[in-house]
View 1 (cartoon, rainbow, N blue to C red):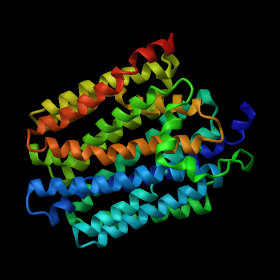
View 2 (cartoon, rainbow, N blue to C red; view 1 turned 90 degrees about the horizontal axis):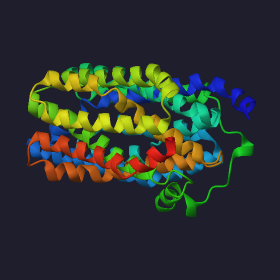
View 3 (cartoon, rainbow, N blue to C red; view 1 turned 30 degrees about the vertical axis):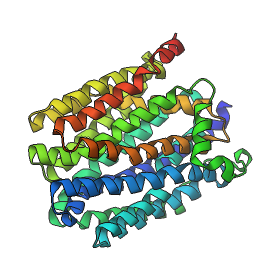
Length: 397
């Protein structure tokens, strides 16, 4: 068994580079997308509303398409579906750059959401080439590449956005085109033909995929962790730029630098510390420690009164970066080798579900204080570990 995985582990650098380029492209648009929406809006409330609509459209499309793309990768291999995702992102970025209306923006975000499941397929790719005991560390390395992309992307996006709001989207689209070319000519396939399984629309729909995810032996309660962690994360993603802009007067450049620091911390934790932490703690324990750290961090962000405090809390929340890799390794280890794509697609679909609903939470809280909007994220983080906490404690005994 170990020899089988060793023969494919050379593909790890290839998928890491593909994820790095992908996340850098996504990171470029984060500091400027709210400002682009604002260029069509007439007030801050109007800007927040339409930014939420754009997030909902992306989330609905992603929720519906992720399990299908994951199942397709189990049938045809990871590489073609990754190429389809790169193409979808490129359409979204170039379309956003050229749009001249809010409805046009929403349309291209919907297309991007429907075709983009790259993170889920990349996780399935890593599961294909890694032995179960290596997956938490490998998922951490993949997370480090995502973090590195968030160092490069937001800073570049902030600098380009200061020149022209549309320029970052053209650059992001160009990076996505580069990634497609890299994937087509260089990226090897990770899923052998013997490990593939037939595609079925009946089992690839979101409802069936989520039900199967909840029925995985020994990890059903982790669906709650994924769900509420996703809600907390997407609430934070949605309000981060708006929150800092309205409360501290930050522009695209300041927001870009703050997101770069988030990326630096992610690289440090997942690329350097994750392997050492796994020598001392099992993934279950790391997940709980990370969730506790995140609850404290979200609460402190909501209570911040000065911009520098946001940076201080980012630096404090080191263990928060261990949650995703720990949970993904437990879920991946519970799934069989022929269902990794559909399983990771179901996890991505669950995240897409919260992309659908979290703007509604933000919208409900918008008339209240800035602090309340981030506090919703803290509450969701607390919910993410309250229910399965006793189960996880039992698992690491």
